Length: 84
Figure: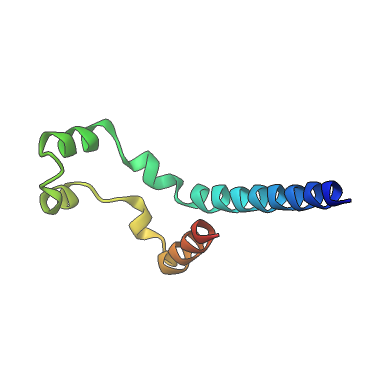
């Protein structure tokens, strides 16, 4: 009987993980534009400056995610999913 209980608990845990993963991917899809914006030019500039010149880099590259009207709630959702 304990084996059956362990199996059910294990199955429930796996289902929770699957749901959490689906939620995570759903939120990340909303951030998809960020990944499109990060081009070879952007990464080359970062590596050439050894990631120390973010002030100048941030003026050269504007991420399209910054134009999303409700970015705070999207970030809160992302954090909530990551904390699960």
